[in-house]
Length: 291
Image (cartoon, rainbow, N blue to C red):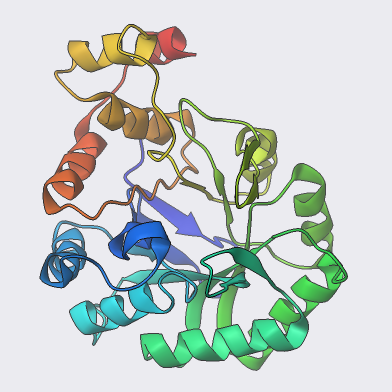
């Protein structure tokens, strides 16, 4: 099982990251809103993650709002060599904490400028266009604005998030798609309807990602209910003296060499537990049993 992954391997500026990243969304307050309950611990989680070998951080300026970007900068700036920070645009939050599209070209540009400012960067290494339902803004108009900012040097690599197979195919016809970020876990592999919108599953795009050497970054891999204690994943967890959550992470890492999980947590203890999952080596028989 490879320990690293290459983002945009055929580009002039590929990026390399260790295959277990960290998603920062859970560092915010309740409902992904406001400051964390324990700010010193949130900062320590970021520092510990990087010190422990995490080299990919996932964030968005609509987490908080702007909370995770500011925490990343406070904890880690000046950023160590080799650290890849990926952010997302295409959505925003209302005062009632709802999630709404923010995907007109001028809005996407405003989001990129805000991310650059709050992260303290001159160029963002990786930006995912989060699809929230196109509404009046077609995908080619949204993605066209992203590629335009890439040409300007504000973005190094462009990815897509919450994307269907048809949307990924359309995106690939427009330009290089570096990564895909979709919901994916052992327990939830296909599209799921949630109160704040539809989350597209990773299973329907994984083979297409592999065909084009596109890393798949699974989100919400630990958020939704893991199988019950009598399910197969619990049996494998007992075999390795691990938790079902750790086996879920290990399963993702073994599912494809192009998988880059980003399990998030607001607990330093859980961070260490998640990171330990990278050392669990599932056998072919384990993977066949899990399905």
